[in-house]
Image (tube, rainbow, N blue to C red; front, side, top):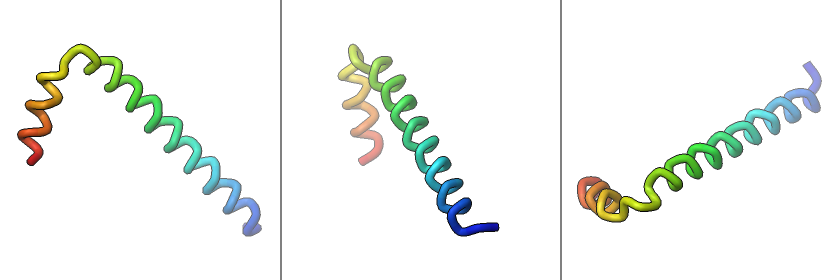
Length: 47
C-alpha cells in the first residue's frame, strides 16, 4: 500500500470526523438555545 494512499485515507477520516463534530455541535446548540438554565444545571453537575 503506497504511503500517499494512507495519508489520503487519513485525511478523509479526519475530515469526516470534523464534519460530524460540527454537525453534532450545531444540533445540540440549536436544541439548547432556549434552555440556559438546563446548561447551567448540567455544568454544575459536571463540576
